[in-house]
Amino acid sequence: MKKFITRLALVFSVLIAGLYLTDTDYILKAVQTVYLQGNTTASIDDYPFFENKTVKIGKSKSWPLHKNYNKIPATEKLLELHKAQGTVAYMIIKNDSILFESYFDGYEENSKSNSFSMAKSYVSGMLGKAIMDGYIKSINQPVSDFFPQYKEGLAAKVTVGDLASMASGSSWEESYYSPFTITTRAYYGKELEKTILGLKTVDVPGKSFKYASGDTQLLAMILEKATGKKMYNYLSESFWIPLESENEALWQIDSEANDMVKAYCCIATNAKDFARFGKLYKDHGKWNGKQVLDSTFVAKSIKPRFEESPHYGYGWWLRKTEDKSFFMMEGHLGQCVIVEPEDNIIIVRLGNAKASFGNNPYNGDINTYIEEAYKMLPNDQQAQP
Image (cartoon, rainbow, N blue to C red; front, side):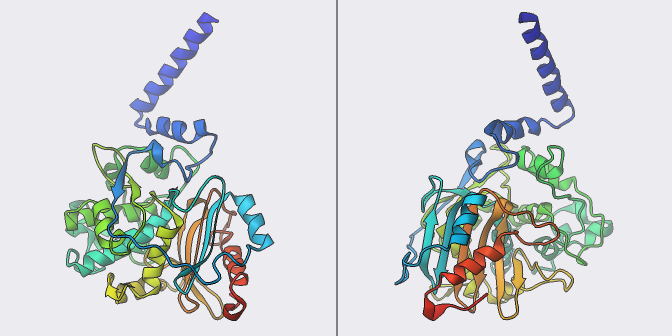
């Protein structure tokens, strides 16, 4: 037994040494935070395993409650979906008042949960804010103004707007379940800027949509250069304080030494504060009568950039039916903030899983979250989605 343990220890030592020699030691962090926790991918409550920086609040204000608050029960279909997909928060906001909210699995209204890629909508909004503040000229400003690595070849054509609309033509490949992908390296590694600057421009920029978290990360690196401010501070100053958020948020960073936020993901907060950003865009960038974000930028963000990709604008997912137009923040495992401005409705869902959607660009459960929410509206306010 002693010899077996010694040999086993030697094998593990060689494996670990191999990971460091091949620059894949980030896999050790993945094993600790995923596999040893009984998961197969990142989870909504994994943020305590990482370094985080605080997104501070100012004077906060609670959402008002609708006159029919929680009087209409959740539909059976919705309850079944919540159970099947591990929903932890579900909320319907109608006419800027909370009509319905429910929490599950030990979560409550102030519990923090990982945004995953819903963070991309915030970063796109911060681009609009940086343009409004005069730090960036326009969405057409070239990336090469900030990073000289982008001065030659196809890379010279990449603009900040291309990054916000996922049209940079980069070599980034989106993959969440293999330990050897750039997506996994970015999430668990400690040198995020180095990882992103190692990407190549392989397709003509500005021509088509290709979902790439690396685009959002590079955009954040540009925003920090342009503003001279850390992303978590600029988010606080630009939106968290002006939108009267009730809770401080946490934004994961790659390491204390490098202090680079994982901009493509990983803002931890609650359903009520996530909903505020949806309301800001619903109201054309205004909050309490003040123009927090330029209305022209907002309008551009929630329309498709490319005709062949009608499901994406600038940092926002889009869904159109015969008579309704939804824009959405979406994230891994089915995080979503769904907005229909004409009906003045915001739906928030946070949780542990989502249906596989194959070639469908949306979270596979989005239709159900929308349809069941509309069924729960008071009779005098119902309109079928």
